[in-house]
Length: 226
Length: 250
Ligand code: HEM
Ligand code: SF4
Ligand code: FES
Image (cartoon, rainbow over all chains, first blue to last red; front, side, top):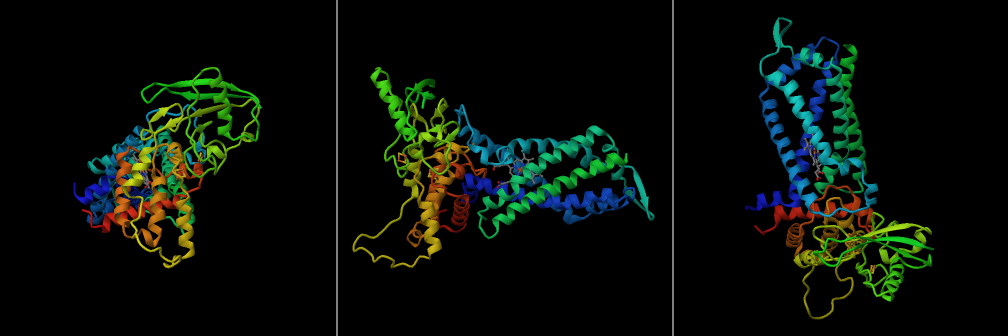
């Protein structure tokens, strides 16, 4: 193995990949949320449809989206490898265990939370992303220009209580994953200092709440609007 | 006070093992936890039974030999003490106390509550040392070390290698122990010669021993009798990343 593959395949190297891919996804979620919030603009989907069209036809965004798929794959595969190793590091379990009561619930259940998010991502890609990409969207015309009407698909999906409910619940789990993941990623990078770690921890909690609530508010509002 | 103990008994590394219940009576609240076990063992020996094997040496919190997972927590219910420093006044009359060995694939059970922690020794052997010149004794304070750095190195050096961090971690990770050892030497001028090689070798050995990975849950620091903090794990990560980027070991 070259020094590089050896460095990223070791215990700290694998965590480094987790951290860097996780931080990339954290940034991605901010952009994604900013775009999605236009669904609530109250303009029948005009802002959202124009935005979605422009995103889909911007070469830079296309390039970043391939990176995004690649990074999430790395994050998932690496997460599975780490979790399997962690399980085999203790083959005989304790009969009584109370010691980790000081660790957050999220930090002890990152893999479970990750799997829930994975299920969500698959449903999300199949339900929205695929429909946006396979050319099946109806057309809508704004100011003489034709756009695919993605808004229609979203608002139909969120008018169904099951779909909207599923979406909201998944966002709660995403929030928990991030509530540990955000600050953990900095610790993995070796960034821990009394000067800024308390700030990173607070920012992580704030980020998780805002992002989870931001994504969750969309189906709630759209469902209530009918 | 009278207590009921549920203790893990296992004849040897290959035995399956099981819990056994014992009653101990007239335990003084001033006894240490290990003295309470001594009383039990005297009773067992008198009855011609095999005493419960457990590790111990200094019995004053400095050697790191004592262990025991007591009622679901390494070194028992109190923070920042080893099992030998735990007093029976931390328990109530009539309590049921469950005592298990450290559980980790890298710490196989030898007998009863005794586990083999030589994986820690091999991590130290891999790089937890400094080379020094023989000859005249250098003057004290010849090399200036800032007080804050000396303090941090001393904090890390407090690690007694007990393994409670591994025992507590849901992944049985040895990151806190290794971090303490790497930190202590990386912080000081005397540790610079082997700085890169040390962290690379110690982490490689830690992997080879089959400890788990770090999820940054912080369970280790919460049970560490010497209160080694998470900042040392961050330093270990920093040292490792720096060494991988800059060391001459290809
Ligand atoms: C948008 C989605 C996601 C984001 C933003 C995200 C973010 C993060 C971050 C920042 C970390 C902390 C890394 C560290 O401690 O250094 C993390 C850890 C983790 N993630 Fe994700 N994640 C996402 C999706 C997933 C998915 C789909 C899985 C799938 C199985 C997953 C599994 C894990 C696991 C197992 C860990 C813990 C690794 C460990 O420390 O042992 N994550 N995630
Ligand atoms: S870091 Fe703490 S818990 Fe771990 S071996 Fe050292 S003293 Fe024991
Ligand atoms: S016996 Fe030495 S630390 Fe407990």
